[in-house]
Image 1 (cartoon, rainbow over the protein chains, first blue to last red):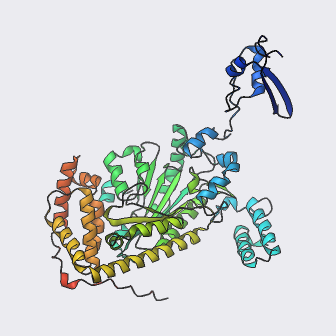
Image 2: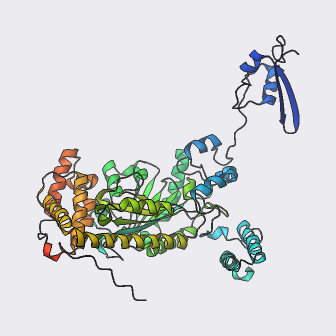
Image 3: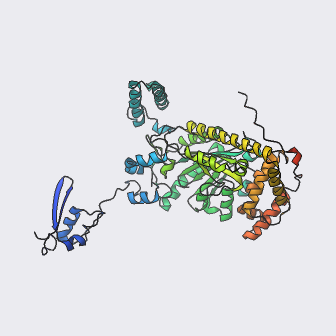
Length: 164
Length: 370
């Protein structure tokens, strides 16, 4: 089998990559595989490499990095500095932070003071909703002490007329 | 607004009051980290965005009723020595002192409340009280937080709580700490055990000027590490319980020293008295160590009981920036050591000689009447 890149040497490296549900195959000779960084385990994107072929462009091997849409903070910078760029960063990078937070803190869930604007009425409030789920669980498991505490917390967050 | 000169001259309120356990706990401090919803945090924001945030926040903070006739200054308007004076007074952080424009400090008249704008977070607010009084310190700060909450929109997430630049401050954004004077535990070589035990239960022990600083003058800051997953009153109650235990350990250590090694105690206090009254060159570290021993002498009855307050004032006054600003010029280290000794000789001139016969073990204070 011939190398897909140089179309001269015998292909010895066979790659299969699935991206966005589409399977891509490419066959490379030793030299081209090396030149394209295929041997580099830090990763390269097959699709981008293939896209690059016809145009003779420089092949970008870095996949698109997760970046905060509000402030432009990147995952790499966050990892390096340990600091986030803005409040919205917690939406962008928050998902993978549980492990980190577990190591740093007593828990991974805020139970303290809440600013006025976040004490939104009723159902659309994530926090109250979340507390309600936990309350149901606690009642079901007959953990009444915890249930009482959760009920008090919900009361604190909801105006009297809508309190459970 | 208050001038810098007034701020420098006026002793802070905590120094004039005797809070609970004042013989061992010098101050209690609580700080809250808050950010505005939207703009990038100070460390990552572009200069113009940082300036915009400051221009929005500074008038709001200055307008708080607590800040009436207070001090407010752009860090760019303060020279290095003035900034360092604020650090030595524990009113701003070393990190903020390293900043220039685009960052501001607002301090209330009695210096019990200071608010840093654009330090690591948009707002770092601190409340300071005499003795072990964390609840009162927190209550004062909570009021300010509540007032600001009505004026600006804070960055908050239902699960993560108050959002901060560093995830270590996430949740409550609260760091509560007490400054403890522990010469008894140091002299009896028990302090490392206590520090290890405190670390094990999720509390931090630091030196006189915070993270990465030495425990000079036998002063140790104990604070909560965790800010997420516990409510503010719970954090404070837990910290307070631990501090009360450390206070007991310190009292026991002092009692044992007085009973088993009275000569060692008298020797330390006597040498400290001699050095501070008669030395002409005193390096900062030695001066702080000797002041610590003098304070112990006062606590144990060998020296006048009201000396403690003077010593607490001196702990700040003999710091490099205070010496320089009081002499109104920049001084080299050798000149500072001379001036430090001179200041101490003058301020302690009237103190009578130690009275070994008055040495008495510490008494546990009466339990509070409820």
